[in-house]
Image 1 (cartoon, rainbow, N blue to C red):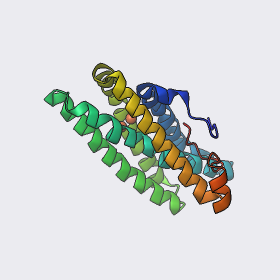
Image 2 (image 1 turned 120 degrees about the vertical axis):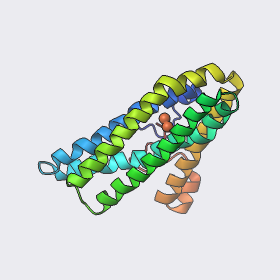
Image 3 (image 1 turned 30 degrees about the vertical axis):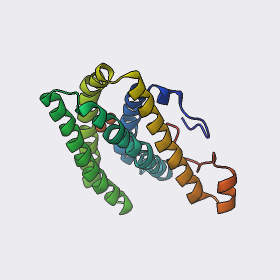
Image 4 (image 1 turned 90 degrees about the horizontal axis):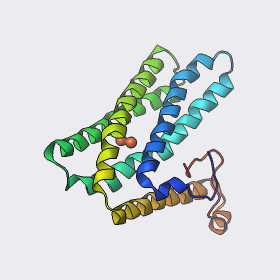
Length: 196
Ligand SMILES: [Fe+2]
Ligand SMILES: [Fe+2]
């Protein structure tokens, strides 16, 4: 849900926020697959749904990966067993794999190629993410809850909030006249979901 100028409460519980974000990513990936079936009956709505899902992945999806790679993984690594550290490495490798498939999908969308190749690519991305998210929900989240101390959770929470605030400022500066942007920093572009 878009809440202009309001930071979501779940950022105060950063591990819960990561889990909630997984559900939102899954929803957008489902949309990227399902929207093509509606291109003939309602092209404008289908394209809008695809564009909205891309926007989410480019903003909140990208920040979610940064939350994990910059704020969470480094704090866990030093205290994990070798197999657990290898598990974190494999998650990072999946992030790279997902980014490559996502870039492929965006290229097809930019060419308006909503054919079998698009469906194959969107399904491949969804399959990879589902497996990745399942591993994170089942194992990473338990590692985080077991390992992180209250002070670290607070710091992660702070970093996640700063990440979203700076994204919000960038969106404001991009979409508003300079003077207006400076005077109303809480304003964001319609459709931007920086608070999720
Ligand atoms: Fe991840
Ligand atoms: Fe994740």
